[in-house]
Amino acid sequence: MAKRAQMPRAAGIPLGKAKTAAKKQVGSPIVLWGIIGAVALVLVVVIVLQVQAVNRPIATSGAVSEGTGWGPVNAPVKIVEYSDFGCTFCRQFALNQGRQLREEYEKTGKVRFEYKSFIIEGPNTRDAANAAYCAADQKRFWDYADVLFNKSGTDQPQNVFSKSALKGYAAQIGLEAAQFGRCVDSGQFIPDVQNQQTEGARLGVQATPTFFINGKKIEGAAPYADFKATIDAALKAAGS
Image (cartoon, rainbow, N blue to C red; front, side):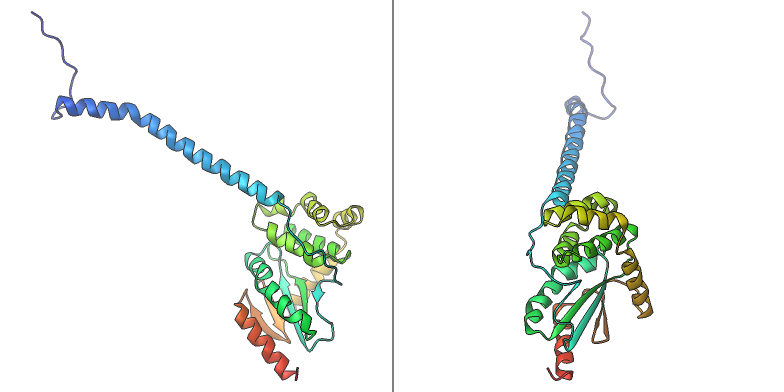
C-alpha cells in the first residue's frame, strides 16, 4: 500500500518545528503591514498637530505701545536686542526671559528695552520683521511679535512667514487689514530692517540674540539671573 507522502522538511529541523516556522513566515507580512500602518498613523498625527499649531490663535494682551520698545526713552538703563523671528534662541528669550524682564522692570520706569532686527535666517524672516514693524505702525508691535515667535518653528519658514500667513496673524489680533496689507506687500519697513542689520554688524553683532545693556554686550538667551544681575549693576552705577 502506498504511503502518504510527507511535506518536505528542511534538513535538521523536526517536523513540528518546521510547521511552526511555516506559520511564522505566513504571519510576518501581517506584522510588517501592521508596523507600516502604525508609522503612517503617527506621521498623520504629527502633521495634524503641526497644522493646528500653525492655525491656532495666540492669546495677546491687546495693549498698545509706541514703536518697538517699552519703558521710557530717558531711562537710566537701556537694553537693545538684535534678534530674528526665525531664530530658536530668540524665540526662547522672547517667550521667557523677555517677558520676565518686562514684568519686573517696565513698571519701575528705570529701564528702556528696544527690539532691533538682525536677519540671519533669510528673506522670510526679513518679511516677518517688516510685518512686525507694520504692526508697530498700528501700536501693536509686542502682540504681533508674540504671535510670530509662537508660530516660529511650527512649520517651514516659507510657510510660517509667507505674506499671506503674516496678514492672517494681523487679522487674528485685530489690526486694520487694508493698511497692514499695503505695508507688507510694499515692504515699507525693509529699509529700516536693513539699516538695523548694518548698525548691528558695525557694533560687532555676529549671532542672535545679542543684547547691549548700557553698552555691555551679552550674546545668546542667557539665564534670567544673568540679565537681572547686569541690569541691577547698571542701575546701581547710574545711581538708580
